[in-house]
Image (tube, rainbow, N blue to C red; front, side, top):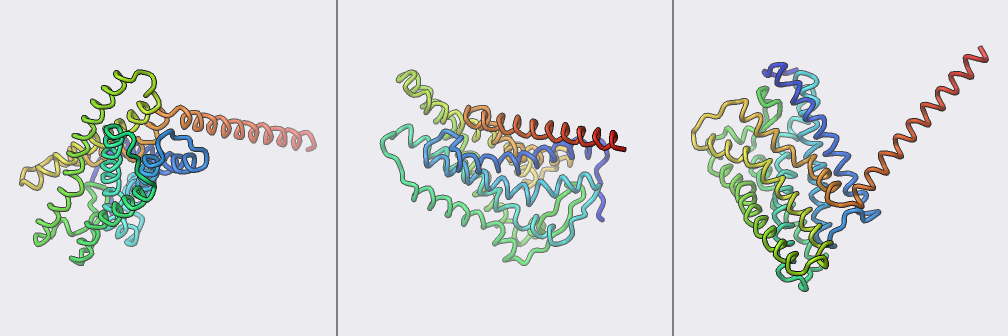
Length: 312
């Protein structure tokens, strides 16, 4: 086992944080996909909901590939998952991460186009083609890493496995180009579109009044989702730019920026709960149902124990 070089004061809060993100990333996004498909719990148009589901699937995969191994590593005090999982994390984590960025970019652009030209509604075929293209484009970093025959290493100071591609001087230009195209530019574009979407949606609401209430809630959902991504990814982008420019970044700040990036993985289901009453009620009903089942099981177990004690 490769032990962590972090101290206890760092490991404990990071372990708790990653545990919460893992639960929300897996079960929260799982509920988003299941409830929206079966019960239509998230009130969005038929195109936007497809992108929301794609975003949830990407978050689930990223949780499995990155956040869950992080959580296990923190609780174990070192890396215990073996070379296969380390290879998967190092080479495949960029795929769902890139899908996340590109999906939010597409959905914000689509919602802006929808509010400007409300009668021009795209078909589901458009959404399906866009989703396929998003996944294909998101294989870029993995393809480059495997193309350079990169290996993988466990970085104890970051508690995760990464590709040796990032330490290869021959691939430095390629890595920087992919980072700019798949992370920096999408975030900048999302920020610009998000501001435009907020301004246009607010103007439409003031002009049309209550008749746009349902659409307004849909816009708020997308604005919050994209806003969360912007806020969580900005520190990571800033520190990545500083490091590639030769400016030294303190390891603790770099570690904080990377974990801050994970907020979007578990944060989206929380936003859907707040902005969509139907999904929020579904989550509440599910929680109440599980609590009742637990209480019934506890009561049944107590009764059986009482009967056994009386018979004995």
